[in-house]
Image (tube, rainbow, N blue to C red; front, top):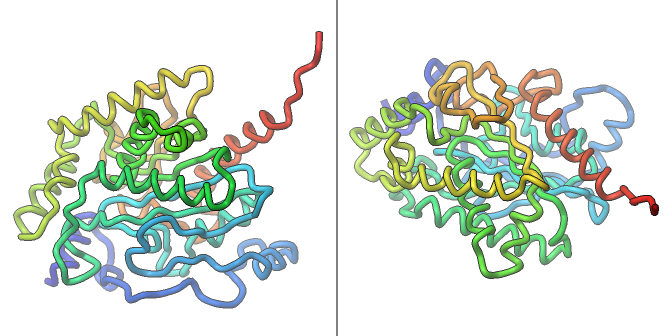
Amino acid sequence: MPLRRKIKNLLSPGQPSHQLENPVSEAIHEGPLLQTTGDSASAALNSAVPRALVEGGGNYGIKTLYDYGAGACVDIVFVHGLTGNAFNTWLDKETRVHWPSMLLRQDMKESRILSFGYDADVVGIWGSGPASSSRLSNHAGNLIGRLVRERERSDTETRKVIFVAHSLGGLVTEQALIHSKNSAEKHINQIECSTIGIVFLGVPHCGSDLEAWATIGRRMVSIFAQTNKEIVNVLNPDSEMLQMIENNFHSILRQRKNDPIELVCFYEELPIVPQRSAKIAGYNLYGIHANHMNMTKFSNREDPGYDAILGELQRWTKKTRQTKTFIPQSG
């Protein structure tokens, strides 16, 4: 069995083998986007909105998937996970629906939708070279730096931010906010100050049993010679790095009690990351009926997972609009 297929089998048990091949570079198809409502307003929106600037492969850095323009009230940033990338993590292969750029842009019109790509390839799955040696903290620093520059270029430094993070991407996002909070630079601080919500999808949070991840890590190391052990070891149940990330992240949450960061956690019902590990105490936890790799792929608006995530994003954005339009009455 090819090496690429072995690692995919670890993360997607039971998935048909014909879906496990590494895709060639593939842009979202030209022409009208997939219609999910059938009404003329959606058809007009489909033709009017620019195409997403992502395709198969790494797509490192910040990519714009959709931009409402100066009137956008929120930036929604997608951060993929272990062995994923900015395109395929969110792509339903059967229907070719890349839901952040094809569904979400229609349902969250007054937004800018971005993706962050980084090398989370612990076994060099997207190419023949060795796995990246970057540590999780390096990816987190790159996320903050590139997001700051994107917002400075578009004069949107104070716009509110929501993150949607899968798997390892949740830990990258948490570490990024820690970096932002602790920086002596005001422009770096702005990301943490502007963050209003995070959607965690199958993120192995500290304080719970991470035995499944540790088992996968050990199996990866045993199968592959070129493995980014710095990344894999973060997921071990006794990882000091993981404990530190979670402790510092919870410190941020406590400090933001008067201006809270909204959180919601989703776990896979066909689990690698067990339910008890995917939760953060005191915050809502919902299931998505899929395995760890497929819990981020939705083919239409009727998918219960998509509907649940959309509901959270719409609620948080509505609060942002209400805050911006609130005018205190004089006594």
